[in-house]
Length: 410
Image 1 (tube, rainbow, N blue to C red):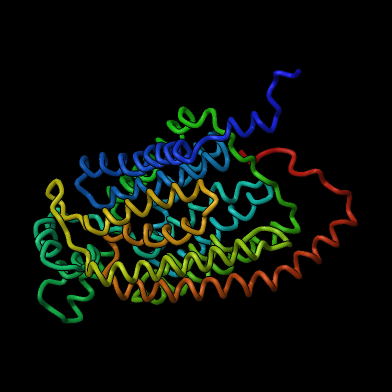
Image 2: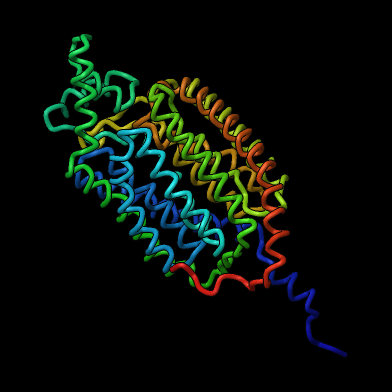
């Protein structure tokens, strides 16, 4: 009589319990959250500047680049984003330069889709949209006390308070010109630009160096290359739509949350001639669900209430809710129920960006409009370019078939 165990029985016995799965996902979430938060906190303590939270954006960029492209792509991405960050702040002074920089970044992402590395680098243009459209201010030494007092007494954003402090009590055209000049000078300040580059680099490089020690036993997904017949339409969509959006929002600076429209375009646009509509619909509905959740939270909590942390006012209520949502979103990302991730990632990004968010309710309303417009643009552009992609694919079959790219761009 056979004493061995059947393969099916072995597989069944080896299947981890729900408790172990949750524990493992919670441990991964804890490590990821520490990698996101610790660099920002340390740099915040050193500089006393709210813009140190850019390190959290850098951490997310590094994590995604590592998981989707490997350590080498992670290191290259950390260097590239640190060089592009100060350029993006200066480029945002003009609609033309801002749109041109976004076109360069999305052209690069589109080109990398041939090697399957577009997902690894997509967060670079997504997060640098914030520095182009609405860079987090650098607190002038002469205004620190006044800005802190106004933040503690109001629910305005840091940008609004700095503008009020620089304007003083006057409302003349001369005062308005003074404020505009001060904001331009901030974008050109070498100290500020160097620190922004450092914030992004430190935030991105730490997870690239640390995570491989934790995930060495995990099986990482390999990049999936795409032929030019799929990569070219994809590149055209993201480049034209995002560059046009940047130009529009720089021309209309009073519209808030423009960064989210660009993020919607980049996240929803897929590579390939056969669009996975189920995934697209899940992402769209999940994003809208997240917007409604954000609007409910901001209406219940109200404006950002600031608490003094290391003598710097911080919107701790928004931050605390954002961190909790972020942790749950990360757990959901590694589960079969990714629709939960799509719902929670929107309020997470908005709440952790509270320093540059003025009126929370208006922000949520504009976020809803941006997602709707972004989704419509992506779907319409995708339908149009599918035809072009299939025509290109038909023409390319005449030439000798290629097995794929010969070498990685890294």
